[in-house]
Image 1 (spheres, rainbow, N blue to C red):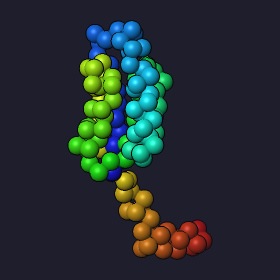
Image 2 (image 1 turned 60 degrees about the horizontal axis):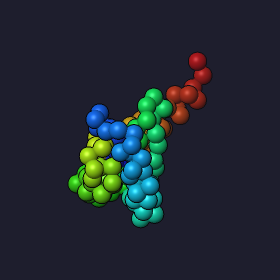
Image 3 (image 1 turned 30 degrees about the vertical axis):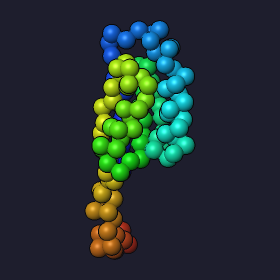
Image 4 (image 1 turned 45 degrees about the horizontal axis):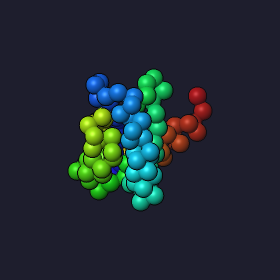
Length: 110
């Protein structure tokens, strides 16, 4: 299951606190990436907060993995966790019957 995790910083956290755990945070993120759980990692363009794409069995697994990040352990950040599912719209629009009807309609002269 794909999980979107959006970081939210603790408003009372200081830059010094973040700096203290930055290396350990990066090392743990790299480990999660190497193990196939952390698939993508971004910073938002509008502020300095991370957006992660995880591949996990379920939301609880994502929560457990994110809880092992040093910045989470220290209470400096939390994550909003959003489970994702595949978009079904194309199947509804382009199933076999509608594809045939669309092709026949486009072949008829106006």
